[in-house]
Amino acid sequence: MLLSIKSWLFETPSKDCMASYAKSGENRYLEQLIALYSNDLYHYLVTQSNTHLAYDVSQQTWLKVIEKRHLYQAQTTPKAWLFKLARNTLIDEYRRQQHFVELDENTHLAAQNDKSENDLNSGDLTSGDSHIGSSNISYEAFDAALKQLSFVQREAITLQQEGFSLTDIELITQSSLETIKTRLRYAKQNLKRLLGANNEQA
Image (cartoon, rainbow, N blue to C red; front, side, top):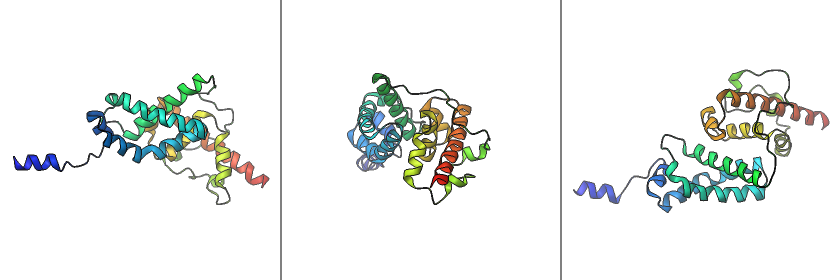
């Protein structure tokens, strides 16, 4: 009896505070989620929109976490589930504003040479891409090049840089594995080309 009381009083924090929040609805778990993921969530949204819209969608996303917590499945990566909510919220907001977003594959900027799939599975954007990995490339130049990519290519590369696996990106974007690989390949080719062009102009 004493052991059970002690366990109740000194509960070990859950490794998955999203699962704990989904089960209990307690604000302390929501606060943990916000502390853990709010910065990353905002960074993803601002790469896909602008600072004002990213802030608004971030707030809407956390409201949806409260509303939809019962839909969370514990086997899902908490961060991926949050990003999926954020993505859907952003797209809904774009549609409400009648802002067109290309959600199908857009390859008009793609270079002709194919990259190996080994590059796609690594988290290193610079793998095999000398222009992208160059120390001469500024953050501003990279950001400007990133914004020239299609929505889905920019999204794919941003999510990979956030540390998501291809499986996680499947969940977030609700796209097939092959589609994600294609988007990443074109995104890396286009970034290499755009950054290379910037270097030549400098």
